[in-house]
Image (tube, rainbow, N blue to C red):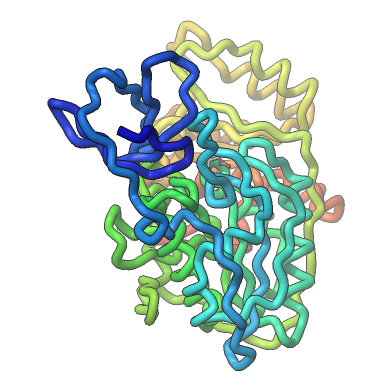
Length: 421
Ligand code: ASP
């Protein structure tokens, strides 16, 4: 029995089962290490193996990098901005983990079908990062690249590929930073690396290409609508959030219907959106990073507010259901410290910890008391969107005396007056 090399795909048969996967380099004697399509690695004792069948190149071609087909110039020109994340990584047969593609452009070479929908005008790679390693400086960098592309007459839209974990921060940042949007800005991702047969990258990218040539002039996130490979949703950048650690349809539209269903070959509109136009896009990316996002929990120490008051200019607190924090009969009453912090100039905003639904300070008396301190209740705004918006609002010196008004102004549909299921 010929043992397969690491990186090869194989079907391994033991007395008990048949296993399909990619062979990894094993450092343990007598053990064959296999990466399953589900993403898990398993070790099998070589002595238990009765047969190994390697899958030929032909069947395994999805994992190969191809050179792009010759592009058809009559297709709409789209720019692609690659920033890192799982979608730009591939299996490392030595470790079983994933690492960046050596040439990020290879992402496109893996999916030549894209070139049947769009002509890729430029590929920009400002950096390669996992999204947890980004901050507002990266959001600015992406926004600048997007703005430049959108203002080129021969560019019809932009696709940004990105890690999933903190994608909704970037989508919110782009929604606030890019003013007078004229064309589609499509953010996409994958939960499984692009070289895996089970990767969700293929459909997400193809639907993103379809969305990028559409008439949707919004910052949208395009990804699997369900675990199936049938269609994607376009979700509004400020109203979406990663809601599952591993499923393909990890991103959900919160308190708002998706914008559209995106099929590889057509688009079905679901809710109203801004239409493609001839605006010149402006970059409005001032940002004050002295902000924090924290979560209220029962038993929270009031002294926490002294710390934030001394070191930050604004905070968003994820508050309970309707917007409550421990006050009055609580053993640790937060009210005095909150009042003190606000008097000293700290901006305190509340966003719903429940994610779904809207804050309402008027239902119970503690809510009214909190409202009187000057705390800003952010209605149904997502905490992450609120965090990005607070940094953006505080970044504008001219709004210094209008922070509450600006936090409650609907700049990018971040507040939905009527919650949609
Ligand atoms: N940690 C990665 C990131 O957010 C995960 C992913 O891309 O899905 O960049």
